[in-house]
Length: 440
Image 1 (spheres, rainbow, N blue to C red):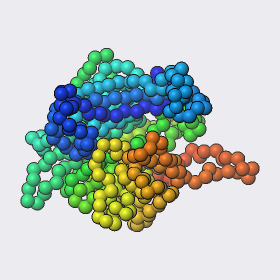
Image 2: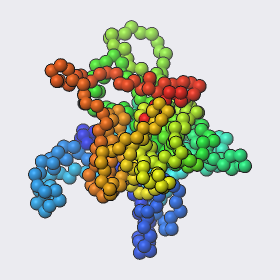
Image 3: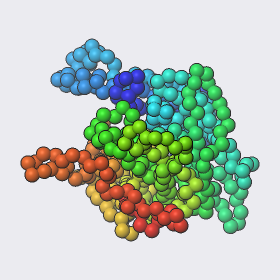
Image 4: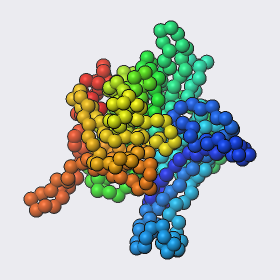
């Protein structure tokens, strides 16, 4: 992510702290509280959302120091260079902050974070004040509690996708909450802080599927505006940009630990305007729209007790699980601090294809292998695993070798995605693409 002309990596996180410093002496470890479940803290807490930017140029400079990392000489030499981390923002609140989303909106980097229970805060990372979006109550259940469970910025729409849990009335026949998938227009950051009640531009309702936890939304897969890698450069030369990837919502259903998946399929938005003579032969790119109301029928692709966490992806999602613990009937992923990005405590990779689960070992992990976080990118077939006892990240590459010509030279990157997501994940209006969906 490029911020103020500096190319780097943006990192955002939420941390908890004691509201009253005297409570530290009580010996209560607030870091043990769950990040995925409602908590009733024993002492008052405050929450801080912190965003930093890691300059790639500064990191490369530090990498050129050929000394033992962490040694006294290395630290003395590293102090001569500019610090790689630069603070971008810090948002403090007494209400819980959670569910961060980093992406571009209106062509600039944006951060979105949820302020419980029904507010979404936006911040332009290049400047401006915080803007707050208040989500209205769902009309049939306006008197019940509404809680935001997941968000994701959709760059090509300048909107944000939100999944909310509505505490419906418990009856003898239905004790499950209702989940609402909504799309909101992002409130731009301005010179002053604003707070507005915004109605959703699209909404879809899902019910009678149990209680959902650990809800994730896949990345839209839109490259940054200043990305100069080979694929965006080739796409800019094409007559029309490719269709965006589907947006998938994954969740764990508590009644059987099954995986539930919803899919939003982008479609071209046809707008009518006054006819005019074209100035160039190139066809203007068609805008795309992903509707939240097209997710009424979810796909239940979970097997009983998978003992894992979903790694969200647009087309080929993954499931991390621990085979030994699953055989003993233990849940492999206890809700704890640190496993928020995707999975926790897993040793294998599982995917559903052709109606059956396929498993793959991640190399030969050591006996003390304990994963803190997973990051899965299905567009390049790469899995990054952060270990609990190490500061390094293990990278597993599942992609095939690049195609080469007769001289051994790498062939150009094609303009079309292969396999085509529209064929791998066909869309059926009646079944929402459930007939031949590839859950991997």
